[in-house]
Length: 107
Image (cartoon, rainbow, N blue to C red; front, side, top):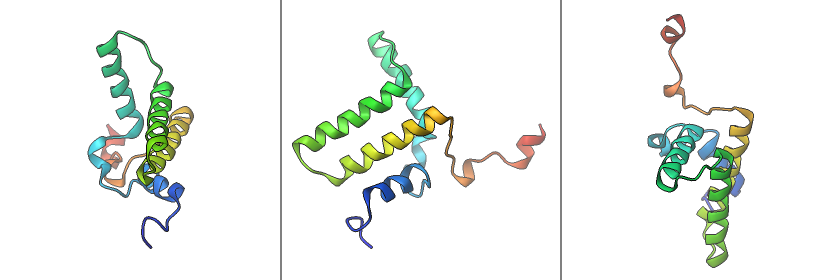
């Protein structure tokens, strides 16, 4: 099945929930967004909620889509919405190799 046959929601789920893509260098989604927020505050001196960071990125993807259709815009917008939902619900999505080992729990 090509990416164009796969629903965009399924593709976004694979990226954000199942983390099967090559995005492991980005770190955990909400942690990455929190760091981006701190950088934004440092650059502008303006406060911004983490929830607003997700919403801004959805808006950016929809703005890009309004100029020219690109599947990635829609997949990313869905991914950011899932990230927002995870953040609101306190869900952290880690890959198996990022999970703490049993030894870490004993400390």
